[in-house]
Amino acid sequence: MEVRPFLKQNNVEIDFVCTGREAKAAKPNPKIYTTALKRLEAKANEAMMVGDDIKVDMEPAKKLGMRTAFLCRKEKIECRDADHVIASLTELLDLL
Image (cartoon, rainbow, N blue to C red; front, side, top):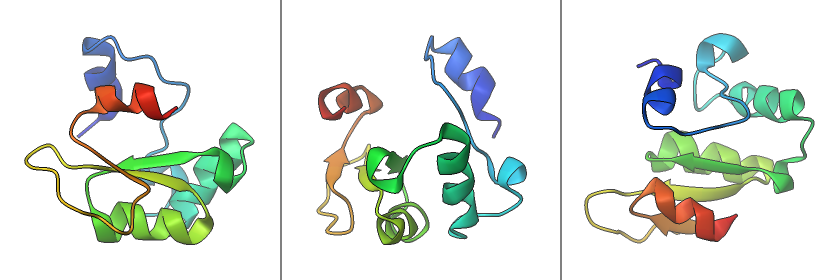
């Protein structure tokens, strides 16, 4: 799914989206995360990975030192591999 049209339709402004195609890697390859960090000129501890897959999103980001938010829209479950568990992206506003 192309994420940019979805974000635009929902009036979500975002500085940068890094897809696997742009990074020439697929999650959980850390290159996708390091590419995004480099493009943003950010250190890992200054960034947050938001995702809905523990193995593919949370674990690699944590290994790099990124903060993480596990998006669990159904029922909040415990995720020890994430710094935060959220049910909606709107909850990110309180975390940033």
